[in-house]
Image (tube, rainbow, N blue to C red):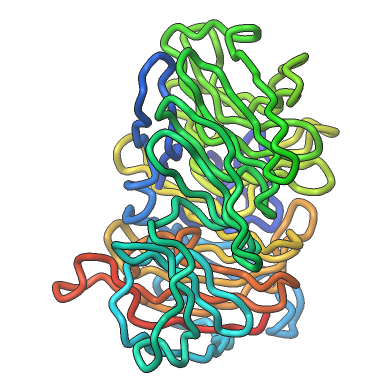
Length: 409
């Protein structure tokens, strides 16, 4: 890292125009080949880890609401001095204690989908605790699709999909107890990690199962991979192994091909936390890339990595910001800290190609229990988002949601 003539940090080997400087690392849940259980490499740490901000100084237009900005070296004074208007939200207090990880969906009409000990329930946030919640299923579910229409659950070693609107329950398959999850935003595909580094992709509408032995493409000794994402006939996974460089790999759902989409330059220092495939083929991700922590966009056409929100620190002190991406992929929230263990801040922004624009704060010093990617739900049209306000305190060490704050973007 070098300083330019104006005293701003300049990254080598990356496009950092209009980047935002801040910071934690992690790599999500990853499955180790040959074992029948998933090990958490990063989600638990991601949920409560600090994010370290490097600073903030304005660039761009004079119109305050339109300006883009870059974080500078003195973030605390900049945040306190900046006259960026705070985006106001509408807060609804919850009268029932629900842990953030059990509140699975917040919808535009106020509908909540959540797990209790004995099943999946539906209620309206305004009437929760005043009216009886509707029980949809007699066992808790694993996951609800991003659009809130389908829920994945299991009984014994058999997995099922629940259509929440109709109540239809569809048997998917039996699996060996490995990692599994909804692989797309609509809940039309579920991926399963079977024993022996075998992936299976199930179409939840047709029941069609595609089996992909990863050993056909990789040496699976000391091999691990993260959750799969399915887009247009391909699975995307965070993979690493003894003979496999760490990176995001693109694998055909029919198992006929596998190739790296993005490889991390430094195996010892680099890591991935979360990633999303954008509609134009670019890759949005956070973690540590080329020894630099942050949120990045990679273009497979130009082979360039652009820094959106930068972090700092090294080794155990490394921090990266977290993000939550809107369904239409034009907006995001990013979650940063002033300093290690210090106050956190959450901003909303627009994603424009390789830069962030129109950043505005939505929460200052919320001291949240988890990262924003675990606490946000978006409306289907991306015009609204809902933050599960889960402040960390001596009284709330279980991560219960105190209120839901609704925002219009």
